[in-house]
Length: 88
Image 1 (cartoon, one colour):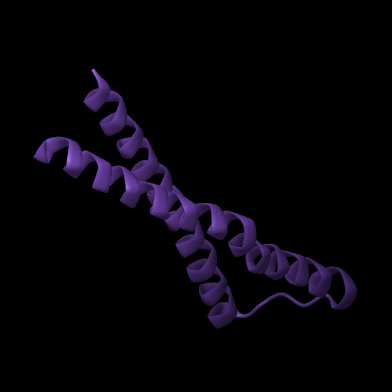
Image 2: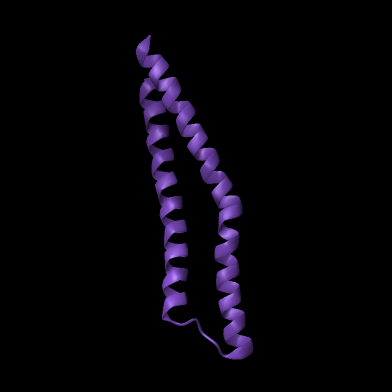
């Protein structure tokens, strides 16, 4: 039926998005970790902290990463609920 085809397509789309989220979690957090480590090392070794422009850039990078992770979790939760409700 059309409803089962639609749910299969949506489930496949959700799986693709989850794979993208897994890829982001595996490889996407490395630059964030490097930024934090480099900032900490720069402070401990040289007493330097990033200026306002660099701090704003770091905040954008970290904030966008956190937003993407949150959004993908919401999408995964909604897809799971849709699959669970469609089985009932």
